[in-house]
Length: 324
Ligand code: CUA
Image (cartoon, rainbow, N blue to C red):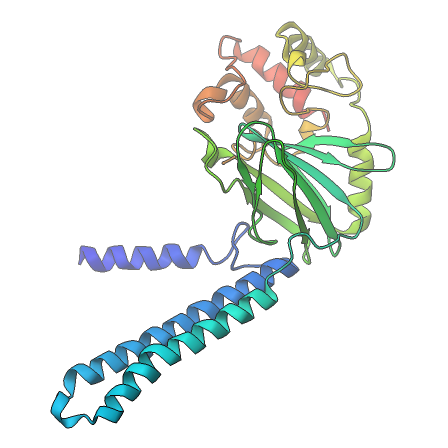
């Protein structure tokens, strides 16, 4: 009975993995569609081959050798055991290679550079006016092939947005390319797909595929420097940010905070998540993250600020959430 239950749970888990924001089997882009088709065809063909070979095996082990002619025996071994698998698997290989998406195909213009950090993502949108720096979130226009230029700061990571296409490794000191097209507007989840240390599992990001006009407006807003604090709590939060030396690691464009070690926070208040997909982006998530970075993400470079009283954490959260 326990076995049945375990089996049912496994089946449910498998089914649950077939849809949602992070599933290669629920494609929302051209390349992901090809890969999902390839998966379906490969699994089906492998199942057919498995059934055929088992059928043959079942047959020959139940027919007495004396009743089987030499010709039939040779035919079964050569035809069923060698030729059939060779032809079927060879055809699958040739077909797979012929439709495999080219990760390096030219894009439609937009270039986004992403660098893997421990354990977050440094993001730069190339524009004619210069790079627009962001972090831990990617926005891209629907219907356009975007060129991602990837590398890493210290160790190997892997950039993967299952709903949009295949994964690509990120190496320190070496550039790799991946071009992807989103065909449906929506929010998808990306995940580091190469073990990179203690918090590899917490190295995620959200991808928002937007209508081109909305994307252009967002990019223009993202390029602008941060506005001044709005209201008392935010102004106090800004003072605490300065007092605690946060600006030594984080940049907030338009302010004296110019650190380059950690993620850029210029518009952190408008992002969908904190800590590279670790938490949501509600006001209380900001104070939770700031106070408990090391519990939430073991090995993270940002120290926990759990010595701050709750009202100071709340003020800091108000300042950061206000950076829209
Ligand atoms: Cu980065 Cu795993």
